[in-house]
Amino acid sequence: MRKLILAVCLMLIILAPANACDVSLFALVAGNSPNNAFAEKLTGLVSSAKAVGNNSQEPAALPGHLQKLMTSWIEFSNTYLVNPPEWAKNDASWKQKFDELTDLIGSIRKNLSNQEPDQPKAHQEIQKFTRRLTRLYDGLQMNELARLLLDTSTHIDHIWDAWWAQDRQKLVEATKNFSSVCHNLSEKLDEASAKMAENIVHRAGELHKMAAREDVFTGKSFEFMLNMTENDFARFNDARREKTATDSK
Image (cartoon, rainbow, N blue to C red; front, side, top):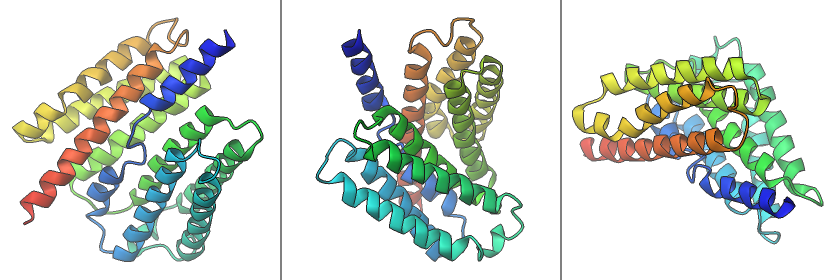
């Protein structure tokens, strides 16, 4: 039984979004920012977090990547916590966001540095860390599509929170909101992009149906579906980023 549980955990890690540190989403949202230095440092943090995730089972390489992530975060926090970009100065949750990110960094390090590392928990926190980084752009003025992309990531984060908390009521509410924002996103896209988003919209609806079941927390079906949905969203953002780059030439 223990071997089976371990196998399932490893499979979930493999299926976890390969681009959990969704650099493409970050670039699409940050593209509205006039502060290039902030965007570059935040992108560096996302890349460092991704490197930690990719090397989490490499004993020789992991300490260096963890140290780089910790150092980068300290430098970033020291620079922007008390001196945020102009568009973030009215964000009442700015300090709270930094506190949450600091706690996540500490927990990631703890879970990967223990004698018996908690790989699933660490990967969960790495994904959460990168999604929460993007939310530092909540106060930025952006176009409607960029806002919907940011909202989509936020709702995915809410679903994960409800899932790990085993809170069925919140899970139903979070999946309902996620399905709604996915439909709104699809309606704002051109025909080709809407076609690419079909899987996301479909899976969002399926997640809501699954969340309504009394046995939703039995087994791993919901978790597999959510991982696949987040993978679809990451691939969609990759395609959108490529399209934006091509159109700007």
